[in-house]
Structures are given as C-alpha cells and as structure tokens.
Image (cartoon, rainbow, N blue to C red; front, side, top):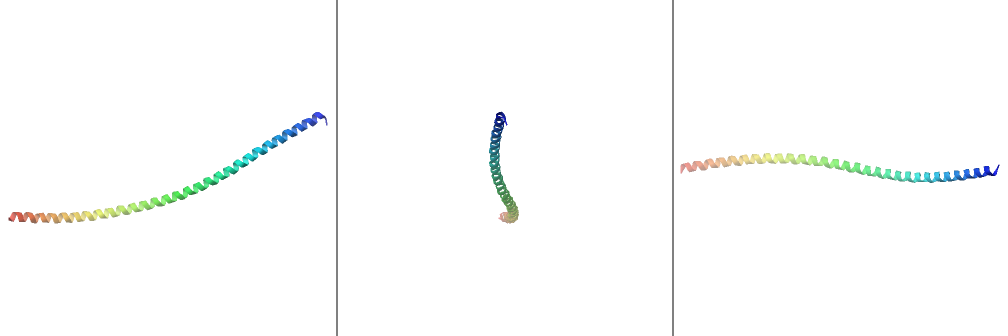
Length: 108
C-alpha cells in the first residue's frame, strides 16, 4: 500500500471515529430526553388521575347539593302551604270577630 493510500485510510478511520463519537453523543442525548419524557408522561398520568378523582368528588358533591336543594324546596313549599292555611284560619277568625264587634256596635 502506498503512503497516500495509508494516509487516506487513516483519515477515513479518524473521520469514522469522529462520526461514531458524535452519533453516540446524540444517542445519549436522545436517551436522556426519552427518560425525561417518560418522567413527564408519568407525572401527567398521575395528574390526570388526580383530576379524574377530583372530578368524581365534584360530581358527587353536585348530586348531594341538588338533592339537598330539592329537599329544601319541598320543605319550604310545605311550610308555605302550612303558613297559608294558618293565615286563612287567622283571617277567618278575625273576620268573625269583626262581625261580632259590628253587631255589638249596632246594638249600642
């Protein structure tokens, strides 16, 4: 082999070593990035699970509030109905009393 050919092979080998070194560095960067991405995905999944759990709690709380509101409305309606009946009774008694008072006034 000639010296030129040997120098060319040495240069090519040095270039190949440099390329492999660069490729290995890039591959290591990619491994690091993939590891970080996996950690981020794990964190996102955990966050999503917390959100889903909190959403379920909120839905249960909403249902409880709706049930409580319906019960409150029912009780309020019943109380107003009872109050109306008592007011009607009171007004009837008042009217009868006024009639008696008017009758007494007419007699005197």
